[in-house]
Structure formats: C-alpha cells, structure tokens
Image 1 (cartoon, rainbow, N blue to C red):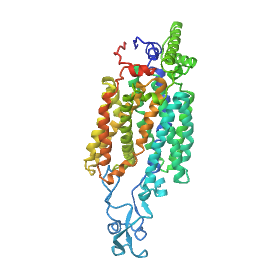
Image 2 (cartoon, rainbow, N blue to C red):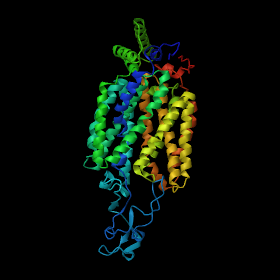
Image 3 (tube, helix red, strand yellow):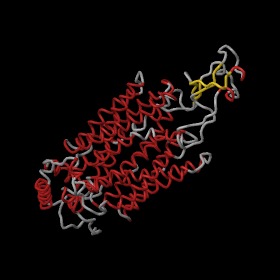
Length: 546
C-alpha cells in the first residue's frame, strides 16, 4: 500500500518507502505489550489485596454458635449501603444491639434492642480470601474511608504520573522515561504486600500509581508514532486488547495466589520481565527527528524497511535524509524550535478543542473507574465478575476496529459515550434483585467506557503536534485524574439515594458525547508536526492505493 500526499513528511516515508504497518511495527507492538504489563497488572491490585469481604459485628456470646438465627435479635436490619450494584445485605455490618450480660447466653432476653452499639471487632467471611489488608486492619465501617482512600491514592498517583510522563516523554524520550518508571514499579510492587502497616502500604501504592501513567503515555506515543495513516486504526483495535488482558491476568493470579503478599510478589516478577524489553524496543522515530537525533532516526527507519521487506535504493535513502531534515527545520521555523508547553493547549486556536477533550476525559475517568472499582461488589463470583468486566471489552475492541474505518472519530466518541450514559441511567432503575439483568447492563456500560477510553487516548495524539503530544496526553490525563479521585467515594452517594451514583456517571457522559461534534475530524489525517498544522489541517481524501 502506498500513501499519496502533496506533503512529504513522516507519514509519506512510512507509507511509501519503509512500510506503515508491517512486521517491524507489529513486532514493536508485541514487545510493548510485554513492557506495558508493568503498567497494567498492578493498577487494580488493591482491589484484591484490600478486598472487603462480607462481615458482621463480633458478638462473643454468640460467635461460637453454628446457627445464625440469633442474628435476628442481636443485629439490626440493614437500612443504608454504599453498594449500588446489588441488593443490600439483610443485617447491619457495623452495629449490634447492646448485650446486657457479657457472661450470659445468646438469647433474645440478653439484648437491649432499643440501644445500638458501634462494633469494635468483626467476624469476616473467609470463603474467598483467608485474609486481606482490610480484614487485618479492620478497614470497615468507621474506617471504611481509609480503604476507599487507597483508590483515591491510586487516582492521585495517576494524576501526578500523567503530568510527569508527558513532560519527561517529550524531554528525554518515550523509551527512557518508560523504563525508568518500570524500574521504580518493580520493587514497590514486590515489597508492597509485605508492608507492616496500612500507612506504608498506601505510600508504596501511591508511588506505584505515579509511575503507571508514565508507562501508558510513553508506550502509547512510542507505538502509535511508528504507524502510518493506514495502520493506526488496526493498531488501536489491537492495543485496546492490552488493558482487558492485563485485568484478566490479575484476576487469574489473584485466584491462584489468595494471600496478598504472594500476589504482590508474583506481580512484581512480571514487572521484572517488562524491564527486559528495554533492550529490544526502539525509541520513537518522530521524537528523534524533532530532537536532532538524525542518525538514530535514520537507523531505525532503515531497520523498519528491512524488516518489512522493503528494498531502498541509495536515492531513497537520500530522499529520507532530506525529508527528515526538512521536517526538523520546519518545526524550528514554525514552533519556536519545536518546543512547546502545556499553555499552548489553551491558545485561542486550541482552547475549544482542549475543553471538549477535557470534558470527555473527565467523564470517562470518573465513570469508568467508579464502575471498575465496584466490579467485585456485584452479586456472584468475585473473580468471574472481575474478569467478565474486562473480557467484555474485547468485543468492544473488535467493534472499534470496524467503526473507526466506517465512521469519523467524532461519531465514534459520541456513540460510546451514549452507550455509557444510557446503560447507567437504565441500570439506576433496574431492580437489584434481577442479578443477571444488572450484570448484563453493567457489562454493556463497561464496553462503552472501555471504547471511550480508547477514543480519548486517540484524539489528542491526532490533534496535537509531536513536541506537544505527550505533554497534551499527560495534561488531559492529569486534570481528569483530579476529578477521578472522587470515583472511590461516588458509591457512598447511594446512602442518600440508591440510583444517584449511576446518574452522576450517566448524565455527564451523554452531555460530553454530544460535545464531541465541536472537535475537528481527524480521520485519515497526517499526524501534525507543528502547532500551525495542528489547528489548520483538514482531512485528506483516502488516496491509498493497493
């Protein structure tokens, strides 16, 4: 396939000379998948290590009885719960009626049902896990906020890391930044499970989560920039399989390693494998061009041509040299020596685009993470529900591949946000006793949120120029994470009104989806090298020839 263009830029080199979606590119995608394990598997690790099992108050006078009939007069009925995805449990898990005589029998007459007490100790269901960070530290009831804070720390870390990843990815290179982050994550994940207390565990989780988006931003930019125009959609459909695969890996590992110390150790070993990929993954050619690393960029392009079975003449090589130098000169002349700051995102020519992207980033972050963090609260098997919530995104990836080819980017974003919004609003009014129906609607919403995430990662890459691209991704992600820190506490709104959390997700998703039509259409466009081209380029006709 060849790409015809009046402008001979990087996409021209890939499409007409070295190959835009050949063996070389897919080899890097495979290696990037292994490297990105360190960015995917540890993300939701705390959902198992700090899993909250069913629990009740510990009542010494009754604990030794095999029957549970005594709970009718010893524990009050449950009236409010933060779980908005399943029917509330029958009994209050945080309070018990006052025991009259601690040495007495477990009888109704020994309980004062007019006086409730807050539990000081609990009995936990050990059918799924022998113990977790939550059961060891009693992170329930009045201490529930400490458990939810782990998810907030996760979002705080992702926020900080998103900004750092973009900055360092543009300054020192995608590859170096990515593997510095992996080298930090590997030991923090390994030893995290052996933390002596909650505070140290939370601190290590925060450090881990700071590094995760650094990996995401750099891996995404590095691999995406290797593809030409015709290869991007196929690449995105394949890359969208990364995240559900990592979640399946985590769910499977947690099933076989139910002691969370061992789970952390195994996940750390996987990160160690990711670290080895440093020796096999090349730096982004586009980054090398705009940062005066001609020899390395040229060497990488010639290697891509060789692996893709393309034979280059001396004239072809000279032409590549001329194009590379012209690209760099153009960047220097047009964009203050190719260097940008995040303030450029808010210039008059860019601000509408940036604000629309922000609206979609924020809604998908809050919505997706709220749904994901509650996956283990669905009725049924913990691991099955967790894995299903990610497996269901695979059909979404297939759908994305065809939809990106047939429809524009804006329509795709609108469609996926609408799926999330309609699913959540429908789920809000679905009786939670209809467990199968709840699960199906929940999974449909997850398909939409997964696809929306792909779109909000795709659009900034196609809209912003090379030396602003990683910073733009990092900035958008950072601001979205600020709002995303509320995701772990959105479920507590169910104590006010059961459907409220789902409305908080659904309505903004619909609004953000409609705003997508204020974005420029980027289908079949070259990646902009300069800020001028970012704001002024128009979609090209599909002139690809076989």
